[in-house]
Image 1 (spheres, helix red, strand yellow):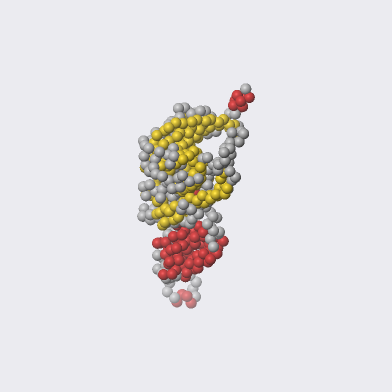
Image 2: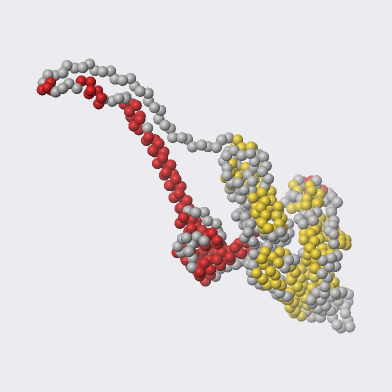
Length: 573
C-alpha cells in the first residue's frame, strides 16, 4: 500500500535511457564474454532485443531489475546480461539495439569486439599472470583507444590486491582505472578469476611508444597442504598470506600523425566517429531577435577535444557563446552525447535556420569528415537598420532682383572733367540674391564634415583593432610566462607570434608553421627551435591532454621565450 501511494505521488519520471556495453573489447576464439544491456525508465522494456552477429554465439542470458525513487523521480532499471562466445577471429561490431520504453524507441551505440586466434597464453598454468590488452596496435595522434590490464588469478587461492595498477610510459595520456570487474574463466583447462582494469589511452606524439610494464602487488593465500583441508564449518583452510608481485609485460604500439592534406580549417582535434545535427526555435523571428539553437554531437571518440562548432556561413548572423553539456554512455567517457545550446541572432532577412559545421578525423577511413546541419525553414521579419544619410540643404529659390534706385543728379565739380561711365558701374553689383549666394558658398560644408567623420571612424576602428591585437598579444605572452601546462604555454607562444605578424603587416595569418615561419628570414637554429614548438603544440592539442597534468619546466619555458624573441627580431620576407 505504501509503495503504491509513493508511486501515485511521484508524478515526475526520469528520462528513459539505454546502454549496451561489452565486458571486454578483446577476446580470443572460444573465450566467453558478457554483453550488458541496461534500460532505465518508468516502465519495463517491451520485448528486449538479443544481439545477433554472424560469428558470435549467444549462450544464454540473465536479467535483474531495480526500482528506485530519487528526488520525486521514479526510475526502473532493468539489466540483461548476454553471454557471448566468438567462433572465429576478426573484428566484429554489435549493431545498435532498438529498445521500446514507455512508448519511445531508443537505440544503443554500436560496440566493437576484436577476436584474436585461440592460443595458449603466456603464463597459463602459473598461480597468477597478467597482460595488457589493446584492441588496436596502430593508432593516430589524438585517437582514444580502450585499454585493459587483465590479472589472471588462480581460482582456488584467496587474493588481496594491495594497490591499483598504474600505467607507465611516455607519449600518451590516460585516465584513472575504472572499478575492476571479475569473472571466472578457464585458460588451458585451469580455472582462473579474471580481474579486468579498464582505461583509455590517447597518444600525444607520432612514432613508436611503449606502454607498461604494469606491476601489481598482491597478497595470496594458497590452499592448505595439510591433511585437514577444511575447518568445522566446511571452509577451506588456507596457508598464511604471502606477498606476491605480478607484472603485465610491456606493449609497443605504432602511432601515426594526423595527415595535413585535406585538414579543414575549423578542425579542432576531434578524432573518432560522430553524428551531428542542429535544431532551432522559434521558426519565426524579427531581425536582431535570437533563435535558440541546440547542437548535438553523438558517437565515440575524444569528446574533450570537441569545441563549439562554427557557423558554416557566418554572414548575416551574430553567434554567442554556448552552454555545453556531455552525457557519457560508458564509464570511460569515450562514448556519449555532447550538446551546445546558444542564441544566434539574424542581422538580415533569412529563409533558413543557421547552418553549423563540425569537422573530425575518422581513423577507420583515415579521412577528415565535415558534417553540416540541415537548413530548417525560418522566417525573419523586418528590415535591417540603415544609417541615415547626411541631410543636404534645400536650394533656395532666387529672390526678386532689387529695385533700382532713381539716379541722383551728378555733382558738378572736378569730377565733371572725367568721362561718364554710366551703367557700367552696375557690373560690380551682385548678380544673385544673398540667400542664393551663401547657400551656394556653404553647400559643400556638410559633405566635408561627413567625409571627415567617416575618415575618423575608419581611423578609430583601425586603432581599436590594433589596440585589441596588442592586448591579446600581451595576454598570450603573460600566459607563456605564467601558465603551468605545456599545452597552454606552447599554444600561447604560437598565437603570440601570429599576433606579432598581424601587428606588423595587418595580414590574417594561420596558426601553422608553414604560414608563420614562411613570413620571416630565419636562421637554421631558430627555425629548428620554432618547428619543435609547433610540432609539440600540435601533438598536445590533438592528444587532448588533461590540463595541468603535463607541467612545463622553467628551462623549457625559457627556451620558448628565447624562440619568440628570435622570431620577432628576424627580418620580414
